[in-house]
Length: 211
Image 1 (cartoon, rainbow, N blue to C red):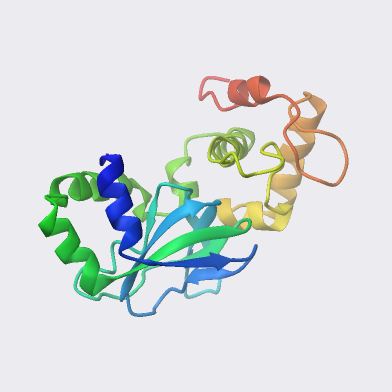
Image 2 (cartoon, rainbow, N blue to C red; image 1 turned 90 degrees about the vertical axis):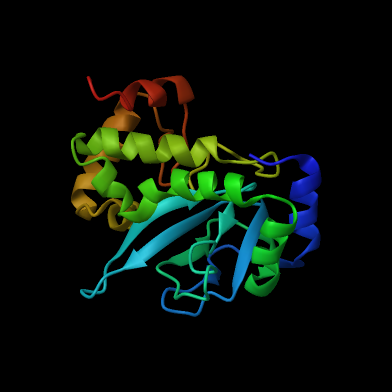
């Protein structure tokens, strides 16, 4: 959505920081005093509810901004962001981010970017409410694989446990286990305890609403 030159300017405005797998990049409720520009790795965006549950809101990857909503006016973070694998990001202070947008006429593409992300303002599972559990799971797995960058050694491995998938989709663990078993029987997922996609084409077929 921006030129390579403008992207480089954005990166130059921040300090490089690396995050380990499972590490929090941002925490819900914290003050949004900076923006993260992801350059390596995938992250999951989680929203906590009063009952203690954490539902998946979105997945982000290299080339995405994280924390851009709260950075406007130093608002409060509306979600927690956790690394699915080792990640690298440039930390751009909010005080520098907004002037940079103004200085280089980037407000229009930034607004377009925010608009494209507004769909992610509700839990991921709500977007898929009209799909059967196996289809919901297949769509989530398909997106995880699609977002894997060149730095990921095994892009077909799913960096989610069954418990995490159940929580992300707001499903019972038994429902997710049944869906995984069905996908394995159909040759979509590899056998064994680890979650890995065996056939991306068949996975894509299982994402169809008409199946």
